[in-house]
Image 1: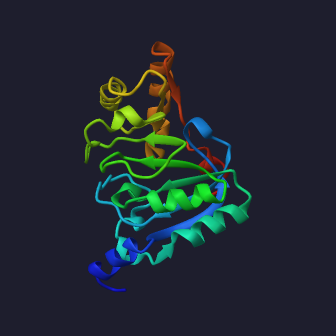
Image 2: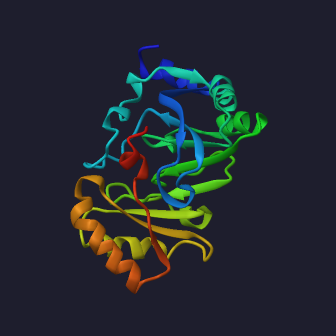
Image 3: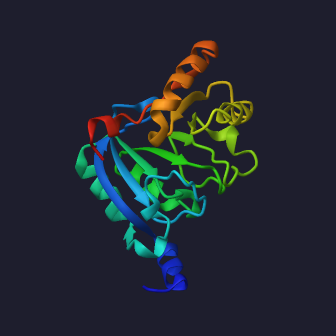
Length: 211
């Protein structure tokens, strides 16, 4: 399947382009330290210049896998949670994948920019909005966790703009961009102390040197 039309046909038949899938620990946000099976889809047009998985952007570079085989691999890992991430996973309809994961007893989590409408059946939705492509209308109402990457001091205002749109039970996290953690972490600490509804998210998997 070399062309876009052929790849889209495969997706309609229950396949997704997958960059990688593996058993690890969740490294960020509300479920930090929790064993999880990560499924990273290929394909993204959001285009964050600081993205650490730019190799995921071109979906045609990543071979399609069936949702059944992904669900079986997740089940056999022994992880309680499957985390679907990208790339931008919501480029694709994720109903079939999440149904297959739930059929084998997995909890389903997603990490998304919200740039596309929500599909799939989720136990936990993490929204990480980007300036480069805004979340679709009303996406914020569905999320359990708002995680904003802080690359520059102006990003605190961006974070608050999105926090104003989520539901009252949504967990709020500020996360330093990995390449600027030395500059941004101290700013985030001060900000959270002054605005205690926020919490700090660190990319703990990078400190532990695990996937």
